[in-house]
Length: 224
View 1 (cartoon, rainbow, N blue to C red):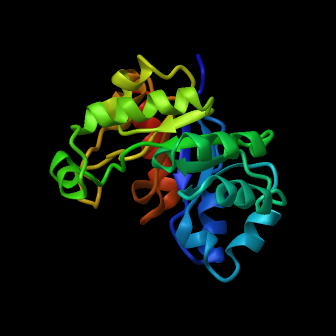
View 2: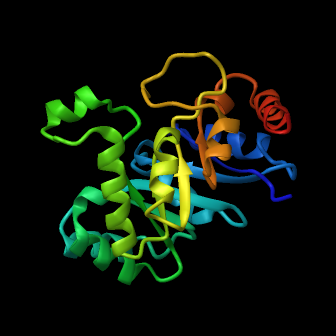
């Protein structure tokens, strides 16, 4: 049986806290990687710390969203980092996605669909006419056309995405306990894996409070 795969969201601008998160989540019972986003990457010592990391699967969640030349140049500037995955907004368009993929070499390019913080009402306010599920599926088709390596989507769209995109699916918006946060389209870990996700992204349910205890509870939950 394959190990469950989790990207732990290191949502902090503090290197010491990042080190603690990594140290306290070491386990052989599940496969663990670490997602670093804008908050950490833009912090004073964030990039320096990332350049020093070895033997960890790093998911750099920068959500690039720009013209083809700019995203391609951004990719070149990240070559000194040993990252496994890098995100780009699929709304950047086919040419930008294609340029980024061409420059990426052995780094997996992950297309971000519609953020889990958005609902149908939010999309209408932005100017989209499609409902969330239809839009995400449409975006997944673009990811396939651009030959991207993975897509990010909420658990609610996994089954729809899998009909048009056949590579890795990464799922944020994972709700371990009954707590409120800024994500609207959420799902429990076990349900997301059953729906077909390859990786889950989990942050606060693990990193807030007793990290060692939280990771143990998650493993117990996944093994039920």
